[in-house]
Figure 1 (tube, rainbow, N blue to C red):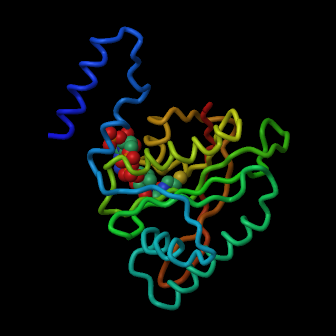
Figure 2 (cartoon, rainbow, N blue to C red):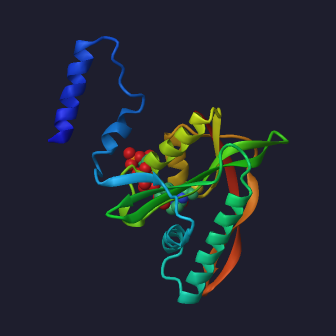
Length: 213
Ligand SMILES: CC(C)(COP(=O)(O)OP(=O)(O)OC[C@H]1O[C@@H](n2cnc3c(N)ncnc32)[C@H](O)[C@@H]1OP(=O)(O)O)[C@@H](O)C(=O)NCCC(=O)NCCS
Protein backbone atom coordinates (compact mmCIF):
# COMPACT_ATOMS: atom_id res chain seq x y z
CA UNK A 1 0.00 0.00 0.00
CA UNK A 2 2.79 2.43 1.06
CA UNK A 3 4.62 1.56 -2.15
CA UNK A 4 1.52 2.29 -4.24
CA UNK A 5 1.11 5.70 -2.58
CA UNK A 6 4.77 6.50 -3.29
CA UNK A 7 4.40 5.55 -6.97
CA UNK A 8 1.28 7.74 -7.27
CA UNK A 9 3.10 10.68 -5.63
CA UNK A 10 5.95 10.25 -8.11
CA UNK A 11 3.61 10.15 -11.11
CA UNK A 12 1.80 13.21 -9.76
CA UNK A 13 5.03 15.17 -9.25
CA UNK A 14 6.32 14.15 -12.65
CA UNK A 15 3.14 15.33 -14.33
CA UNK A 16 2.97 18.50 -12.23
CA UNK A 17 6.44 19.80 -12.80
CA UNK A 18 8.55 19.21 -15.90
CA UNK A 19 11.74 19.95 -14.01
CA UNK A 20 11.11 17.23 -11.45
CA UNK A 21 13.85 14.65 -11.83
CA UNK A 22 13.58 11.00 -10.91
CA UNK A 23 16.43 9.82 -8.68
CA UNK A 24 19.22 8.40 -10.86
CA UNK A 25 18.88 4.95 -9.34
CA UNK A 26 15.15 4.78 -8.75
CA UNK A 27 15.39 1.09 -7.80
CA UNK A 28 17.32 2.00 -4.61
CA UNK A 29 14.46 4.19 -3.61
CA UNK A 30 11.98 1.35 -3.82
CA UNK A 31 14.43 -1.19 -2.35
CA UNK A 32 14.01 0.48 1.03
CA UNK A 33 10.46 -0.81 0.95
CA UNK A 34 11.65 -4.39 0.64
CA UNK A 35 13.00 -4.14 4.22
CA UNK A 36 11.52 -1.12 6.01
CA UNK A 37 12.87 -2.03 9.46
CA UNK A 38 16.53 -2.01 8.42
CA UNK A 39 18.79 0.76 9.65
CA UNK A 40 22.26 1.69 8.41
CA UNK A 41 24.61 3.45 10.78
CA UNK A 42 28.24 4.04 11.63
CA UNK A 43 29.53 1.60 14.23
CA UNK A 44 30.89 3.78 16.99
CA UNK A 45 31.67 1.31 19.77
CA UNK A 46 35.34 0.92 20.71
CA UNK A 47 34.99 -2.83 21.03
CA UNK A 48 34.54 -4.34 17.55
CA UNK A 49 33.80 -7.87 18.82
CA UNK A 50 30.18 -7.74 17.67
CA UNK A 51 31.17 -6.89 14.07
CA UNK A 52 34.08 -9.35 13.99
CA UNK A 53 31.81 -12.13 15.30
CA UNK A 54 29.24 -11.36 12.60
CA UNK A 55 31.90 -11.47 9.86
CA UNK A 56 33.39 -14.70 11.25
CA UNK A 57 29.99 -16.41 11.44
CA UNK A 58 29.12 -15.43 7.88
CA UNK A 59 32.50 -16.16 6.31
CA UNK A 60 33.24 -19.43 8.06
CA UNK A 61 30.13 -21.38 9.02
CA UNK A 62 30.27 -23.67 12.08
CA UNK A 63 33.85 -23.14 13.17
CA UNK A 64 34.99 -25.01 16.29
CA UNK A 65 35.16 -22.66 19.32
CA UNK A 66 38.94 -22.23 19.34
CA UNK A 67 39.08 -21.29 15.63
CA UNK A 68 36.08 -19.02 16.01
CA UNK A 69 37.81 -17.05 18.79
CA UNK A 70 41.05 -16.99 16.80
CA UNK A 71 39.32 -15.47 13.76
CA UNK A 72 37.34 -12.93 15.82
CA UNK A 73 40.65 -11.93 17.43
CA UNK A 74 42.38 -11.58 14.03
CA UNK A 75 39.60 -9.37 12.66
CA UNK A 76 39.59 -7.20 15.82
CA UNK A 77 43.36 -6.80 15.51
CA UNK A 78 43.08 -5.88 11.83
CA UNK A 79 40.41 -3.26 12.60
CA UNK A 80 42.53 -1.79 15.41
CA UNK A 81 45.57 -1.62 13.11
CA UNK A 82 43.57 0.13 10.40
CA UNK A 83 42.11 2.59 12.90
CA UNK A 84 45.53 3.46 14.25
CA UNK A 85 47.04 3.82 10.80
CA UNK A 86 44.44 6.02 9.17
CA UNK A 87 45.94 9.48 9.17
CA UNK A 88 43.97 11.03 6.36
CA UNK A 89 40.70 12.93 6.34
CA UNK A 90 38.87 9.63 5.78
CA UNK A 91 39.53 7.47 8.85
CA UNK A 92 38.68 3.78 9.08
CA UNK A 93 34.87 3.67 9.27
CA UNK A 94 32.62 0.67 9.88
CA UNK A 95 29.03 0.88 8.64
CA UNK A 96 26.53 -1.67 9.83
CA UNK A 97 23.07 -2.63 8.64
CA UNK A 98 20.87 -3.86 11.46
CA UNK A 99 17.43 -5.29 11.92
CA UNK A 100 15.84 -5.72 15.36
CA UNK A 101 19.16 -4.66 16.93
CA UNK A 102 20.97 -7.50 15.17
CA UNK A 103 23.78 -6.91 12.66
CA UNK A 104 22.78 -8.16 9.21
CA UNK A 105 25.42 -6.45 7.07
CA UNK A 106 28.79 -4.73 7.25
CA UNK A 107 31.01 -2.59 5.04
CA UNK A 108 34.15 -0.64 5.88
CA UNK A 109 35.66 2.37 4.15
CA UNK A 110 38.98 4.09 4.75
CA UNK A 111 41.62 6.00 2.90
CA UNK A 112 44.36 3.53 2.04
CA UNK A 113 47.62 3.77 0.20
CA UNK A 114 47.12 1.89 -3.06
CA UNK A 115 49.15 1.43 -6.20
CA UNK A 116 47.59 3.31 -9.10
CA UNK A 117 49.47 3.05 -12.40
CA UNK A 118 52.71 2.45 -10.49
CA UNK A 119 52.15 5.44 -8.18
CA UNK A 120 51.21 5.19 -4.49
CA UNK A 121 48.09 7.20 -3.72
CA UNK A 122 45.83 7.61 -0.72
CA UNK A 123 42.35 6.80 -1.95
CA UNK A 124 39.04 5.65 -0.42
CA UNK A 125 38.81 1.86 -0.39
CA UNK A 126 35.77 -0.17 0.60
CA UNK A 127 36.22 -3.64 2.06
CA UNK A 128 34.71 -6.22 4.41
CA UNK A 129 31.36 -6.08 2.63
CA UNK A 130 29.22 -8.94 3.86
CA UNK A 131 25.49 -9.53 4.30
CA UNK A 132 23.98 -12.33 6.41
CA UNK A 133 23.00 -15.27 4.23
CA UNK A 134 19.28 -15.07 5.20
CA UNK A 135 19.11 -11.40 4.19
CA UNK A 136 20.75 -11.52 0.76
CA UNK A 137 19.17 -10.23 -2.47
CA UNK A 138 17.18 -7.58 -0.59
CA UNK A 139 19.32 -4.64 -1.67
CA UNK A 140 21.30 -4.42 1.59
CA UNK A 141 24.78 -4.56 0.01
CA UNK A 142 23.61 -1.98 -2.50
CA UNK A 143 22.51 0.40 0.26
CA UNK A 144 25.73 -0.19 2.23
CA UNK A 145 27.86 0.66 -0.83
CA UNK A 146 25.78 3.78 -1.51
CA UNK A 147 26.30 4.96 2.08
CA UNK A 148 30.05 4.29 1.96
CA UNK A 149 30.33 6.20 -1.34
CA UNK A 150 28.45 9.14 0.18
CA UNK A 151 31.06 9.39 2.96
CA UNK A 152 33.86 9.61 0.38
CA UNK A 153 31.95 12.05 -1.81
CA UNK A 154 31.32 14.39 1.14
CA UNK A 155 35.09 14.52 1.63
CA UNK A 156 35.48 15.49 -2.04
CA UNK A 157 37.15 12.33 -3.27
CA UNK A 158 36.55 11.55 -6.94
CA UNK A 159 36.76 7.75 -6.90
CA UNK A 160 36.04 4.83 -4.59
CA UNK A 161 38.21 1.71 -5.02
CA UNK A 162 37.82 -1.92 -4.00
CA UNK A 163 39.49 -5.30 -4.48
CA UNK A 164 37.50 -8.41 -5.27
CA UNK A 165 38.35 -12.06 -5.86
CA UNK A 166 37.95 -12.68 -9.58
CA UNK A 167 35.95 -15.85 -8.77
CA UNK A 168 33.43 -14.10 -6.54
CA UNK A 169 30.67 -13.85 -9.14
CA UNK A 170 27.91 -12.42 -6.86
CA UNK A 171 30.23 -9.64 -5.66
CA UNK A 172 31.44 -8.88 -9.20
CA UNK A 173 27.84 -8.68 -10.38
CA UNK A 174 26.93 -6.40 -7.47
CA UNK A 175 29.85 -4.02 -8.07
CA UNK A 176 29.22 -3.89 -11.84
CA UNK A 177 25.56 -3.14 -11.21
CA UNK A 178 26.70 -0.29 -8.93
CA UNK A 179 28.87 1.22 -11.65
CA UNK A 180 32.30 -0.10 -10.63
CA UNK A 181 34.71 -0.91 -13.46
CA UNK A 182 37.89 -3.03 -13.48
CA UNK A 183 40.95 -0.86 -13.23
CA UNK A 184 44.62 -1.81 -13.50
CA UNK A 185 46.17 -5.25 -13.48
CA UNK A 186 44.86 -8.22 -11.55
CA UNK A 187 46.97 -9.20 -8.53
CA UNK A 188 47.90 -12.62 -7.21
CA UNK A 189 47.21 -12.73 -3.49
CA UNK A 190 46.04 -15.12 -0.75
CA UNK A 191 42.93 -15.49 1.34
CA UNK A 192 42.41 -17.28 4.64
CA UNK A 193 40.42 -20.50 4.35
CA UNK A 194 39.48 -23.16 6.86
CA UNK A 195 40.39 -26.70 5.79
CA UNK A 196 40.26 -29.76 8.06
CA UNK A 197 39.63 -27.56 11.11
CA UNK A 198 42.69 -25.42 10.43
CA UNK A 199 43.23 -22.00 8.98
CA UNK A 200 45.47 -21.81 5.96
CA UNK A 201 46.19 -19.59 2.98
CA UNK A 202 44.71 -20.23 -0.43
CA UNK A 203 45.87 -18.49 -3.61
CA UNK A 204 43.45 -16.19 -5.35
CA UNK A 205 43.43 -13.40 -7.91
CA UNK A 206 42.08 -9.99 -7.02
CA UNK A 207 40.80 -7.44 -9.44
CA UNK A 208 40.84 -3.76 -8.51
CA UNK A 209 37.68 -1.88 -9.38
CA UNK A 210 36.79 1.76 -9.06
CA UNK A 211 33.80 4.01 -9.46
CA UNK A 212 33.58 7.73 -10.09
CA UNK A 213 31.40 9.21 -7.38
C1 LIG B 1 28.04 -10.15 -2.36
C2 LIG B 1 27.03 -9.81 -1.25
C3 LIG B 1 27.66 -8.77 -0.31
C4 LIG B 1 25.76 -9.24 -1.90
O1 LIG B 1 24.89 -8.82 -0.86
P1 LIG B 1 23.30 -8.65 -1.11
O2 LIG B 1 22.75 -7.82 -0.01
O3 LIG B 1 22.70 -9.95 -1.33
O4 LIG B 1 23.30 -7.83 -2.49
P2 LIG B 1 22.10 -6.93 -3.05
O5 LIG B 1 20.80 -7.54 -2.66
O6 LIG B 1 22.34 -5.53 -2.65
O7 LIG B 1 22.31 -7.12 -4.61
C5 LIG B 1 22.40 -6.04 -5.49
C6 LIG B 1 22.67 -6.59 -6.89
O8 LIG B 1 23.92 -7.29 -6.93
C7 LIG B 1 23.83 -8.45 -7.77
N1 LIG B 1 23.93 -9.68 -6.95
C8 LIG B 1 24.01 -9.75 -5.59
N2 LIG B 1 24.11 -11.04 -5.20
C9 LIG B 1 24.08 -11.80 -6.32
C10 LIG B 1 24.13 -13.20 -6.57
N3 LIG B 1 24.25 -14.09 -5.58
N4 LIG B 1 24.08 -13.63 -7.86
C11 LIG B 1 23.97 -12.75 -8.88
N5 LIG B 1 23.88 -11.39 -8.71
C12 LIG B 1 23.96 -10.93 -7.45
C13 LIG B 1 22.46 -8.37 -8.41
O9 LIG B 1 22.61 -7.59 -9.59
C14 LIG B 1 21.65 -7.61 -7.35
O10 LIG B 1 20.52 -6.95 -7.86
P3 LIG B 1 19.11 -7.77 -7.96
O11 LIG B 1 18.91 -8.49 -6.66
O12 LIG B 1 18.12 -6.69 -8.20
O13 LIG B 1 19.30 -8.71 -9.11
C15 LIG B 1 26.62 -11.10 -0.45
O14 LIG B 1 26.31 -12.11 -1.36
C16 LIG B 1 27.68 -11.58 0.51
O15 LIG B 1 27.71 -11.17 1.68
N6 LIG B 1 28.59 -12.47 0.02
C17 LIG B 1 29.65 -13.01 0.86
C18 LIG B 1 30.71 -11.97 1.15
C19 LIG B 1 31.31 -11.37 -0.10
O16 LIG B 1 31.57 -12.05 -1.08
N7 LIG B 1 31.56 -10.04 -0.05
C20 LIG B 1 32.16 -9.29 -1.13
C21 LIG B 1 33.60 -9.17 -0.86
S1 LIG B 1 34.44 -8.27 -2.14
